[in-house]
Structures are given as C-alpha cells and as structure tokens.
Image (cartoon, rainbow, N blue to C red; front, side, top):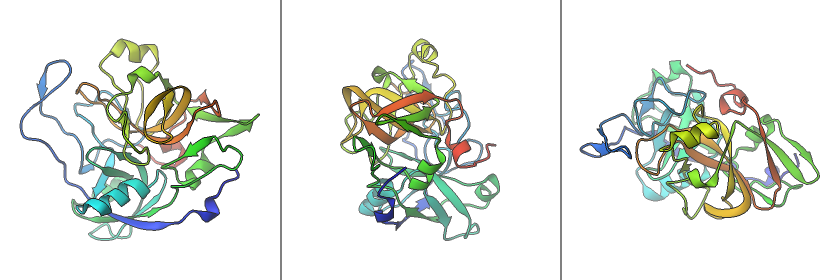
Length: 287
C-alpha cells in the first residue's frame, strides 16, 4: 500500500490515567428507568477489546485504560494526534516501562483509550502517566486520493487484510450500519477527535442488521455517512470506524465509533469478515 508514511511526524503526547467521572444523581435512560452504573474513565479490569460491546450493566464503559490531561490544549493534542494502533508507554508509577496500544478515542469527555495486558492493569494506578508515540494523522494513500485516512497508525493499516482492484479498496468489516442509526457526535466539526455513537434503542433494527453481537474493536462500515471534514450525511459516502466503548441506556447513544477511513464516491468497498477486530490485528488477548 503506497502512502506518505515516511513523511508523517512521530510526536510524543502525554496523558494520565483518568479517574472515573460521574455526575451526581441518577441518569434516566431512553426507557424511562433511572440508573447509577459504572461508566467512563479509570482502569477497567474485565472489559477489553474483543469483548462484547452490548449487554454490560454499565454505560459508555471504556475498555482497558482511559487517559487524559488536565490542560485543555494539551488534552486537545492528545485526543487529536493519538491514533489507533499507536504505541503507549507507562512513564511513571509501579508499571513504569510497560507498553500498551491505543485502541480508540472517546469524544465529549475527551479520553484516549489504551489496552494493556491484565497483569499490567493490576500494577497501574489512577494518575500514572502514559506517553503515546502519536503517528498517523495526515496519512494519505497514493493510489486512492479519494480516501481520507485519520486516527490510523500506518502499522495497523499494514495488518488489515486489504485488497485493491479498479480503484476500489476492499476493506474487511464485522458489520455494516445504516446511516439513520448514528446519533451522538453527528455534526462534530472534526473526525480526528473522539467518536460518535450507534444508537441502540431500537433492538429490532439492531437484530435486522446483525448489530447485537458487536464487539469492542470491531471494524464497522457506516453507509451514507462522510467523515471527511466532520461527521455528516452524504448519500453514497462510506465511513469505516472502530468500536471504542460499550453501549448506553441514554437516548441517542450507544457503542462509539472512532473514524479510520472515509470516502464519498465508492472508493471503499466493505467486505463482511467476522474476524475484522483490533484484538486479532494487534494480537491482543481477551480476558
């Protein structure tokens, strides 16, 4: 795959393991039920990439480790420049020297999500510093000028079994999502940050499209959605994202997608593949 990777800049961005964050009081779901459940932030010991994205007694859970930095501009750089597949290094605390990998980004609260082996999770603590070798923003595919890449480490691109023919890139995906299911995050001004959610309030529609078995780390195609310059509806466009956090009870929310590739004129053809998951491509062990 010819690209401009040799001209991409590697730069350090730093975050701290974020504590879980909650608003006081109950949160009322789309079903009218008030709940208090685990959600974003912290170290999640038993939910990792490769695990189900739906079915947890939780809301917007981020698998593995969530990192953030208090300074607003530094956190904007962390959430913008870090790319899925980037190497992460613990640089403080008992787990200093251990390595992990970026698996997604979550908008709103602006977390970067990092996977570490379970033994490393046990040695990490809230406040530990994690440095990411950010590399990937600005990636271009020489033979596919109509495809825009973002949030994608070129090394991860090498591990995805892509094929090309007739100016079309065939991309493995675990599922395809119709555009009407996309909710929170639609209209955000830049797809290089955060994510947007597959709404899951209509379970029958999810069943119809085979989305009830979504897993964290799945590559997913969204039809008639463009992420070229922000997230919007565009007939004939397609967006490839990775599932980065779990389901939600809130209206307009659900498993989040961080955008990896987008095209507006048929340059990407999704190919269904149940194995299209970061846990497989990056060699992560679930559990």
